Every structure is written in C-alpha cells, then in structure tokens.
Amino acid sequence: MLTDMSWLNEPQEWSLDEGVLHAVTESRTDFWRQTFYGWTTDNGHFFHRSVTGDFTAEALVSAEHTTRFDQAGMMVRADERNWLKSGLEVTSGIVQVSTVCTRDFSDVSMVPIADFTGELAMRVTRFGEALTVHCRTGDQPWQLLRLGYLDLPATVDVGVMCCSPERAGLKATFRDFRLVPPISRDGLE
Image 1 (cartoon, one colour):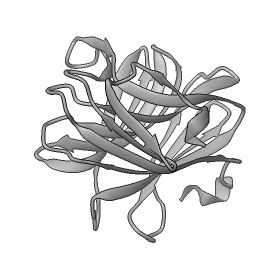
Image 2: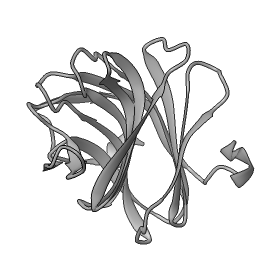
Image 3: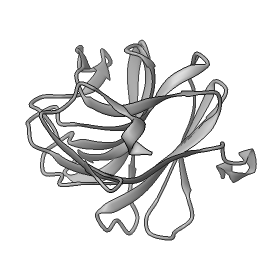
C-alpha cells in the first residue's frame, strides 16, 4: 500500500523496502499551530495518500526517540489548518502517545503506554466529521485515545508522519500500513 503514497515535506533520508518505510527527520520539523508556544510550523514529514469517505487506517510505528518532542505516528490532514496527528512522542522524559487535533489552533493530549516494547499499533478511523484514534501494544485490546471533531472535506490525506522539533535525526519506522473500511461504531470503547 505504501507504494502509492507521496511526501509532504520529503526528508532527505528515507527508504521503502518490502512495505517498510524508514525515515530520518530533518532539523526542527513539526506540525503545530499557535497554542501555548505561539508559533506555527508545518514542515514535519508526512507520507500520505488521498482517501475519500470513511476509512480506518492502521500502521505499526517505532522510532529511536531520544529528545523532547520527537514524534512518529499517523496523520489525517485536510489542509495546513485542519488536521489530526497521533503517535509516539517524548514528553516529560518518557515515550508516550500524543494526539494533536488542529482546527486553526492545535491542542494536545498525552497518554502513557502500558507494556510498551518499542513498537505501537496505531489506528485512525473517520466517521464523517468524527475521527477516532486507537492504539495497542502486541496483541492487547485496542485502547481508545481520542474521539474528536474535524470539519473535513470528502477527500483528505491519510498516512504516517514523523518530526523532531528540537533536533534532526529521529529514525522512524512504519510497517503494515493499510486502509480498510471503517471499524464498527461498536468498537469505540
């Protein structure tokens, strides 16, 4: 599935081999708008494809996190002012799962990862103007991280993202990316 995708802000160093994407972040890259920090940055790396209608996107995400705000995960994007990203992030000195929902202004939530082994399964589902974010480690049950609203057009860009606001050189790996019909609404708990 990764072969029909393209980059927004392509990093200099990346490879795609047998469905596994490796990417190394450029210096001071991020996706963020205004809130708290007062800056707008839209130069993170986003490997994506366009999708129309409802969907579920899944990927296995891992990264060599060493620095505050290092990030690797998934993204749904309408444009530079309306998007959601979620994934592994170093905050408060440990790797957690962050979810940022942006409607002109960004917000962020953090969740610790139980039994984290270095790789996290991520799942983002679109139900019209609602997005859900789930994660899990190993074969554990999916954990709901976020149910949020975004005023999205029929077609959005969906894929994986990575960035490192305070450095260059985060090595991120994404595997088993897939797009499927949306999960059942009963699967939201």
